[in-house]
Amino acid sequence: EAQVTQNPRYLITVTGKKLTVTCSQNMNHEYMSWYRQDPGLGLRQIYYSMNVEVTDKGDVPEGYKVSRKEKRNFPLILESPSPNQTSLYFCASSFGWANTEAFFGQGTRLTVV
Amino acid sequence: AQRVTQPEKLLSVFKGAPVELKCNYSYSGSPELFWYVQYSRQRLQLLLRHISRESIKGFTADLNKGETSFHLKKPFAQEEDSAMYYCALSKGGGSNYKLTFGKGTLLTVNP
Image (cartoon, rainbow over all chains, first blue to last red; front, side, top):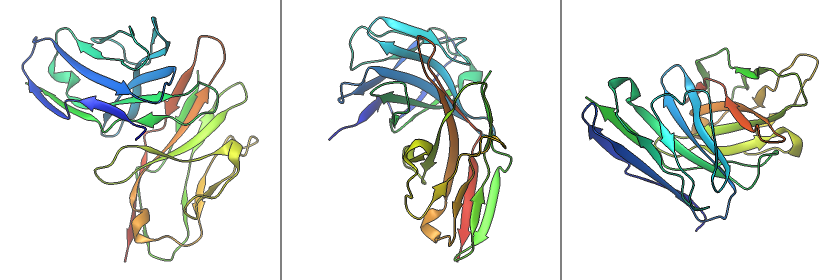
């Protein structure tokens, strides 16, 4: 089944403890991205990647890192999480970047205490 | 900079009534516009895109470049249409791809 898989689905952590949220797609998509979803703010893009080893900042990149060593994986790294990073995170992938459908993961609900 | 505005956070209608979810955009180039839907406890999924000019689940959306709008419409709402709807605009080309979402409208269809 073609899909985007995120792990974990739920995570509670403490301030400053490094964490990684994984994202994997099995559709051979070139383009992948991370969003955070907050009440009243909708989805905001954190980082995106147009291909292996090609990443760029979205609208809210502060406090996040990403890497794209393989086409299928695009992990989101929080080196030193803070409470303002408590949010619902979505990974997405698409075949290209011109008028193509984005496929989303199930979401990761992160709480930083 | 590209921007997508959905002026209504919440929209409540009765079953069988027409529904219109508003979306306005600002973008200097030729926009590529989408509507995404998120049903309760499910992931976001594409509902429709402007270039396809299709009707999905009875929903349609027409791109009006003069008014910079891409409103989503359905003549007769159903209870299963209750969901969060996001309008999105993509800017393609070169190394500067971006997909920008509006803040979303929560549609509730009452029986």
